[in-house]
Every structure is written in C-alpha cells, then in structure tokens.
Length: 67
Image (cartoon, rainbow, N blue to C red; front, side):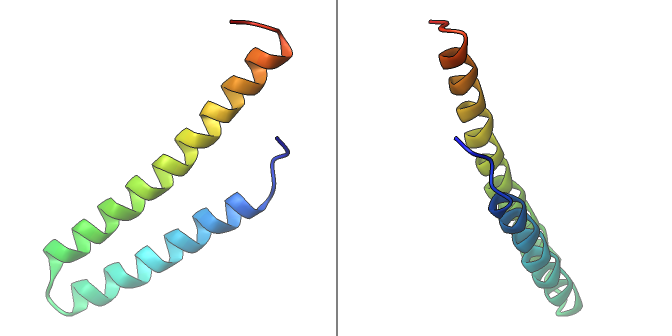
C-alpha cells in the first residue's frame, strides 16, 4: 500500500469542519451539541488512523513473512 497525501488532507478537512461547527454551535448556545460534534470528529479520525495502523501491521507481517 502506498501512503498518499490524501489521508492527511482528509483528516485536516475533518478538523476544519469540526472546528467551524463547534464554534457555530457554541455561539448559538448549544454547548452539548458542540461537544458531541467534536467527539464524533475525533472518533471518525481515530477510526481512519486505526485502519491505517492495521494496514501497516499487515504490510510488516507480509514483508517479514510472519504469521
């Protein structure tokens, strides 16, 4: 698997969108929804990173022929 720069841009875009939504919701007086929005953004990014780490481990296992 070739590491593309696309994943970095996706994570950055999610961060920007979550930040904007967070600020809008806080200004509207909806702090609970702002916190949930931030939490969802963190979970989405973590799942993306976990998938990348899984692919990394699979690649290392394949390279060194580990089972």
